[in-house]
Length: 122
Image 1 (cartoon, rainbow, N blue to C red):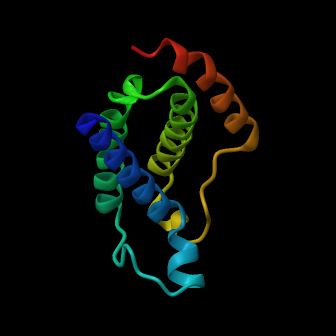
Image 2 (image 1 turned 90 degrees about the vertical axis):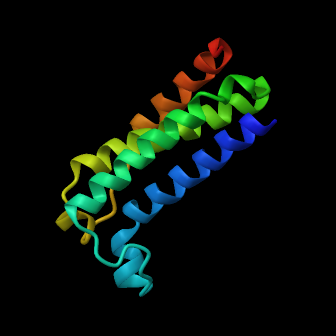
């Protein structure tokens, strides 16, 4: 139980950091919120690296979950991993003006692949 809790905390932290980067423009301009007040390329690179590590930590505990939960958790994990890679490739200047997204067709593929992959996790 402790190990799955640690995986869940890591996954939650990764999701939150991805959301901070993805929603940077909306949060700072639209909502006047400042989660990352001085977003730089260096800070973004650090966050992307932390996200990768947290996603890896969470992935290492997914086989311990019941299969019914594993499919959804793995699908969400993989969606956020894909989004993190897009964020990594997006310059900070662009994050300040637009919201990065995973295209719908790619989302469908990611979720569809999660179903058989979840059953094979060991």
